[in-house]
Image 1 (cartoon, rainbow, N blue to C red):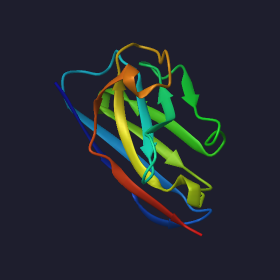
Image 2 (cartoon, helix red, strand yellow):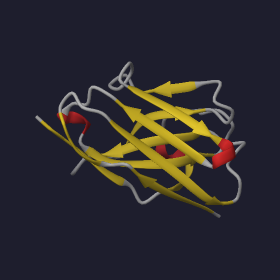
Image 3 (cartoon, rainbow, N blue to C red):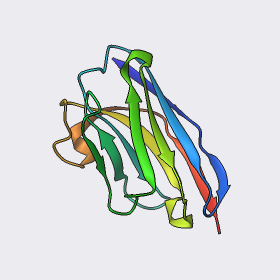
Length: 125
């Protein structure tokens, strides 16, 4: 069983930055990809970014490429999402998740296993 806890969300003006963190407890996740998804009110949960088990490969949704950076520190059991140049359309609850393979095979939420409770990100215009 893996428990994931996100932190770092908040309210920021458009153009600002936030850094989300995800800390896990329970079994090791060092051999699995990790990812971030987001869900806006009334919308489906969508893929944001993912990183391979050793950090040698990263994946991003087109909407965040060049603005967001995902990273991980297996020794500290953490993953992070640096979000720059934030836009109002980035407003959502952001969820950390652990994949079921060393590399992401599909940006589909069903391909990921454990999930955190989410952290709210609100970007004002």
